[in-house]
Length: 151
Image (cartoon, rainbow, N blue to C red; front, side):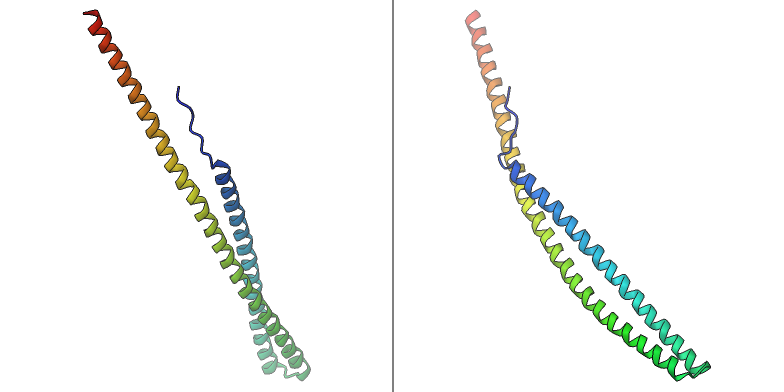
């Protein structure tokens, strides 16, 4: 009976698979964080647009200087918040790109070991086939020699 295939670097492969899974999780979290920041940015932009429209209405319908000042101040605060959020989105985009790169690197590291495992598996199968052929040849030779002895 032939021995079972055993890959000597299986623990390394397992470790690299685990690392790849961790990097994929980290990328997912970074993408979720980016999406959240982008959503906040969109909400702030919508609030700003709504406030600007409301301010225009106040100017046309009820020209109250105090209300216009308050609305202008609020728009300035929204502009500051939008600017800060854009910076956060930019940082998160960089973080996502970095996590994507790390994941790609982990995938490549795993594939290297997987290719080696496939190569070793092919060698193992080839060796098993050679051993089976050798046994079959030996069996055929012994059967042929028995027939010649019987004559």
